[in-house]
Length: 378
Image 1 (cartoon, rainbow, N blue to C red):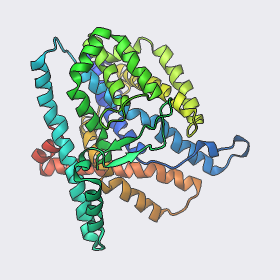
Image 2: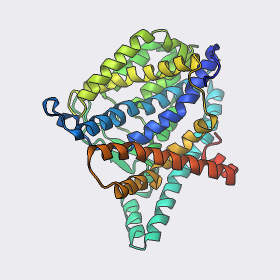
Image 3: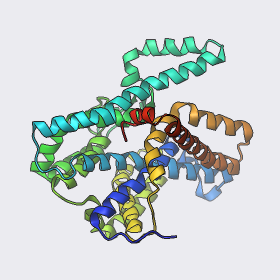
Image 4: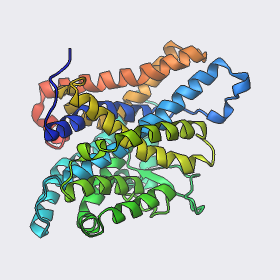
């Protein structure tokens, strides 16, 4: 059954962002499936059944799901400056104080909880795992659990050949919150850059995003800065994010489709560095446009519970749940046949999301106050 048609631009904007929260969070889970596949292993002249799994995993985890975090940065930048009338020290302090509750507190708590939960599990095994776990933490530096405990993409480079590693706290997905906190603290710079340079500032950041020529400092990932600034551009200059992007949707869809095909084809090659950033930009815009169009025509309806549970899925899914779901399915379905690999690929995130939502509902029922603190009063 279709919902009522949306006529207000403001309602369309609100419902588009609210509806996307849950599917984008599911996409994040698919990203963290981290399938080890190589599109270059596929030979069109000699297709094998396993190639279907390779293509599917690359298409979803490396391409479509990879749009989730840029979308969240885009929305964050837009909402941070939404309906802003003026900018001064009082406004900055007020927004920073609010973000302390919604970003910093849950960021700190969930990293600490991650250490505590994994410690309890290792202790329960009675095999010395707890000692090894804490030895690893102390060796890396305890403070790093909040900042750069993990490193990845150590072999990736920018277009100048410089290595561009990424860093994450002990609860890896929270690198997004870490970067958002840093950008919020630097929001006066974002405001004045976008206010006085308009699209020029956004385009300069877009060039940095495309080339990856940027700082390697943890907390200032160029993808976050660029998409946050892009979202900020619409708010600072009084534009509706959704309706503005919809004005040129006839261009965004074919550009997204073409770059998606190319990015998938070149996945795992040097050409990927040239094509994938373009797909990310066009893909994010296409996702927003497509969702807004369905919302406008009443085809999609926001599920408040799933939208509210999205943050909980974000902070909990890598704390044992995804890993144990993988292990359970490998034990139940040990076969490496292409069909069963595909089955495990889709069932694992499904189980993970279902468990996270169930935990969210139980926590909400048992201790709504604790949940509110852990969720940053969302």
